[in-house]
Image (cartoon, rainbow, N blue to C red):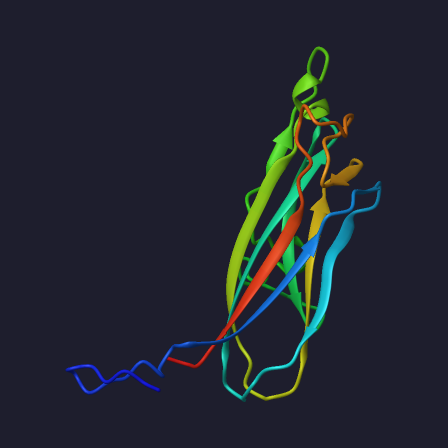
Length: 167
């Protein structure tokens, strides 16, 4: 039941309708350019709903390269700078410089986070991919570059999508 406010609006506008979420707790590595950490189909409750997409992915990578994360909706890059295409980024980019013993890149992972507001004009399902993008070295999901032990913690990666009525 909607709450009526003094200005004539009510709580139906912009309210959360459904929460879509996922967890990835395995470890994975790849020397390729990208890893699709999440690849899910989301069916809207109604046409025109808004989807606030948020992720947190634990990533490490080798020295002398950078890493960031990306969103694809129906295989189209979204959330980055206009016209960026496959270089589109929804998170920070972290570069690990290789110097002396490379201990910083060997012994840590970073939590990459990003968000994006998607408006689905139809009630048809859409495909969401949350992808890593490496600029030239092996990448590791949910572990540090050279270690997978309790001294560094054992992270997991997550996404949450809030489906909302338009405001």
